[in-house]
Length: 160
Image (tube, rainbow, N blue to C red; front, side):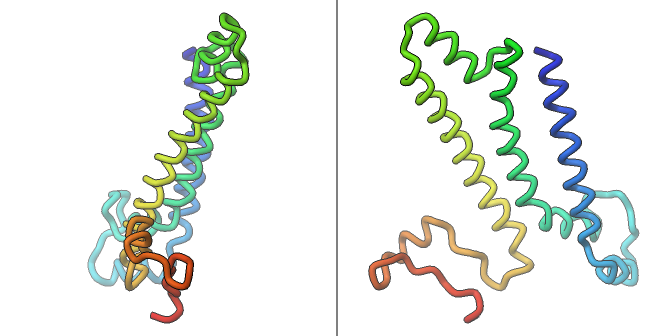
């Protein structure tokens, strides 16, 4: 079990470090020069001038990687570690109800993935505050507006 956790952790660490590197590289050199001219030190402090911009650039990729890693955890059942899919396999070997238990396991994966996707939406919305004049509406805000012409109203960002 520890070997699986180490292997998955190393895999996730490699992807996340590459995502963080790409986010830092995506910050325009002029932004860093502007921060230096204002007296900000180019330091490895996460609150420095380029880290919030890098986080905004890489937040969607971070969320996608976390969701992908959740799905990858089902692979550990192949080596005998008990996870959600492994537990379903153990139960259906006892009661011979294969399809209903696989449906339950897939619904659990769907539920957790949906919760993580909602969290990712709000995280991206938070980081987009400085880039957009008005943040994109949440699904609840869209539902409160109601249907317009038989469909939900989605504001056009080019009109603002």
